Each structure stands twice: as structure tokens, then as C-alpha cells.
Picture 1 (cartoon, rainbow, N blue to C red):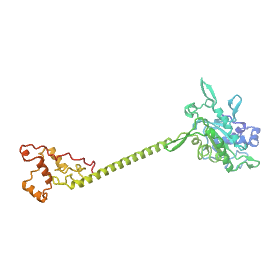
Picture 2 (picture 1 turned 90 degrees about the vertical axis):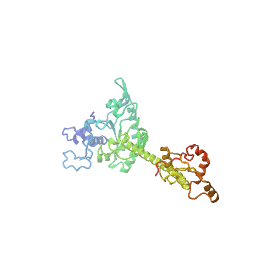
Picture 3 (picture 1 turned 180 degrees about the vertical axis):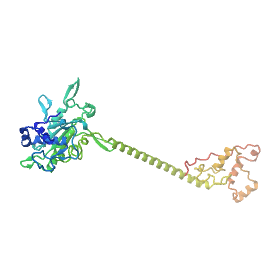
Picture 4 (picture 1 turned 180 degrees about the horizontal axis):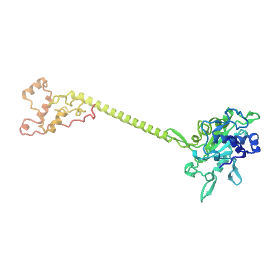
Length: 426
């Protein structure tokens, strides 16, 4: 793919230590007559060698190549063969788009990227941004390949369809890399660092229609999709000289911060973070659901407890169990304690009643009051030593003497089912 101009070959040979005589005309033009081309070549040499002459120790021997300073991130893969410069890319007929340089980086998952150097000679940054219109037209150009219609850029650079996404369903264009230089006006820089930074922002704004994707959000993680869009990256020559091509050099238009080349072109959402956030949300929802269920259970238990305590106060005021002499409503906080008011005619607590029914014991029918006891009660009130007096009177009325003598003793009317008991009594 190599396609460097003679200027680029001369500079590359000098940087890489080639002793071949590249010709005085090429070397002289490269040093004095074509600053734009020489700066493009410098950027390529920086990418190929991972070094730069800027910031290196001064040269002591003028006959030797300028010393170079190693950059922290090293060279790009592919070497000099990965680059071409000033090569026309046909849009239609004789109309072409001509990048300053193009590089193939399949080792980084980038089939091809296009470089545009801006030295500030065009005052209106919209003229620089307008080149993306031509890139868009070129990226949309299709050709026949083996009876199949494919994008020309895909065929030309052998871009694997599944990896890079050149398809009708998900067309993500190759990236265009804008590198801005301070330029020169006479012997002085054309732009200050602050003005160059503003020019980069203006370029971002002027190219928004080409790079702006569609925002999405999952689990609070924001990302974008870029169907039909061009990834546009911006940087400055000084940042490339400082960090190298693979350092935190590139600003992906539409994102914040400086990134490496591969990170800036990575459009994949952070699926691990999304999965983590989803798990955290589900755990939180489950915890909230458990808290709500527990609060509901506590409220229900509190309500039942309130009913139980009211029933307990009522039942404790009645006569005791005729069998165990305990509370008629049952032992406090036992599983079978009544949680409703016991009928006044009841004789046994729930435990004794259950025991009698289980063992099929004889019905509990109180003895008939004697005539003397009846007269005394009529005169002085119910006897204090007989808490079941009122029930005894009821039994005497229901089962008089002659009925009892006939053996007709149906199961006691007092053996009524007792009320519900508290669930999970605490």
C-alpha cells in the first residue's frame, strides 16, 4: 500500500537511517518548499518509528540524521507499507477526494483511516469541514464485486464485513483524523494554543451532521450508535509529538476527553458495566421487595396482635377453664390461644377442649344446682366459690333431671369451635 511522495521517501529514509542518495531536488524541496507535505511526512514517520525530532537532544554532527526522541506509546503496527499519501479516491467520474494520507491498521481492528492535516491556511474552518461532504459521498459509493453490490471502500481496502460493519444493516464509515497545526505567518505561529483549541471545537461544530450518532441508555450507562455516520477524530500536531499515535492523543467528536486511537474508535457500549448496573438494580429491587413484604407481614401481625390482646382481656375476665383452671381463652401466647371473644357459656380452654375431643371423652355437663343453692343464689346472688354458676344454670335448663335420667346427653352446647389462633406467635 506504500504510496509516499518523493518528499516523504526522502524524509523517511533520513529518519530511518537510509544512506541511499534520494536526490538533491527531492531533499531540497522537502526541507524548504513544501511545509504541508513535509509535516504530513513527519507525522507518518512519527507513526512508523514511534519517535520524534521534537524535544530530542540537539544534533552535534550536521552530517548525521537529526536525533529522535522515543515516544511513550511506540510506533503503530504495519510500518511504512501501511501508508499512502495524496492518493485519489474516486467519487464519480473525474471527481475525487484526496486524503493527505491513508493508513491501514488491521492489527488494531481499523481496516483504513484517512488523515487530514490543517495548517490554518483556510481562515474559515467550514472550508476544512466541507471535505467531509466528499468523504461521505465516497464512503457511500458502491461497486459490483463478484456479482454483489458492495461499498467501494470495503472492496478497495479489503475490509472484512463482519468485523468493521460495512453493511447495509450497520454501515459505520472509516474514521477521518483531523490534525491541526499552529501554522506560520511569516516567522510567527498563525494560532496560539488557545486559538488552536477553539479552532478544533469550531471544526467539531461544523462537522456535527457527519459524526453525531443516536443516544441510548441502559441501566444509566449512556452510549451512542452511528449507523451511516463517520467517526471524526481531532488532535493537534503538538499532542502527537508529545504522546504519539497510540497515546491519549485523540478527541472523538461527540465524546469528552482525550483517548487512544483504538479507544476513540470503539463504539461498543460498556456491556460489563451495564450488566453490573443491571445486577445492582435487580438486587436493590429484590431487597426493596423483601422489605416491603416484611413490613406488610409486620403490619398484619401487629393487627392480629391487637385483636389477640383485646380478646385476651375479654377472655381473662370470664370464668376459668373448668378442667385446668387456666384462662378460658387458653394459655397466653400459646399456639391455640383464642384470638376472638369466647362465648360466655364455654367451659374449657382450647387445649382441654381439643384433648377431650381427641380422646373422645365424655361430654362435660355440669351438675344440677340443688334447691337450697338456688334459693341462696336468689337471695344473695351467685356463689363466689362457683365461677361456673351461670353455666350450671344453663345446663340445668337445657338438660333437666328427667332428661339426664333417660341418658340423653348430647354433646355439650358449650363445646363450640374456638376461634382462630395467631400464626407464628412471637
